[in-house]
Length: 98
Image (cartoon, rainbow, N blue to C red):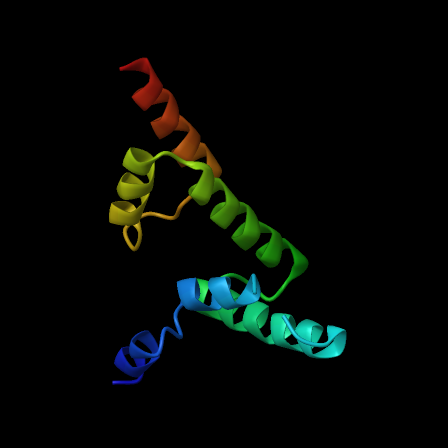
């Protein structure tokens, strides 16, 4: 039930990512971004370390730069296999070869 409510109010990984990238006073802005980043990281399942944040942001940035077929493939694989840079790079090379 909790997960359904979170999804209904867009309190998902994607929802927090969008909120993370949004304006008010500088102090409010920083506090809000810290909160959204923490929630985004928690929901994405990354460690609460510098390396965990780095991996999350790199994964997201890599994903949004992919073309649609690769994004679709990666979304379908989510939950079955971890999204790794090497896995995405291999698939991209396969797509470009065809």
